[in-house]
Length: 98
Image (cartoon, rainbow, N blue to C red; front, side, top):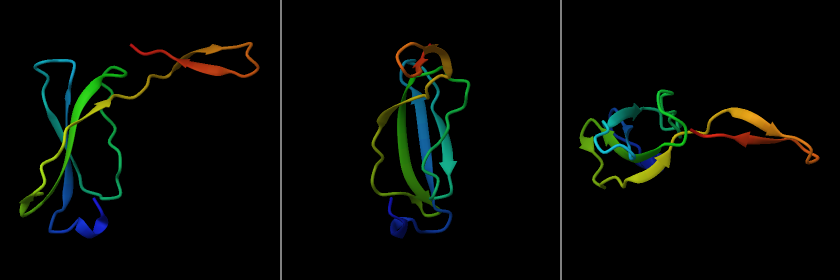
């Protein structure tokens, strides 16, 4: 959202996410109160490369934004480097996911 539209007392974004691969997964929410924050790190308790349904909506003290948030599919982050391939002139990391 452009900064000009980020107004009203207590303006913030509400990020809501839920695991997509589990039917009865709990929905979790997080308030982003700084407009300059453009990413959110999902807690490490989730496995690597897991699908999530994610929504982001704007809110202030008056209430939620008029426009309904769209749900997008996002994925948890990549795992660390566990193995390397040698002999190709360069070293290429291989990422293994669980």
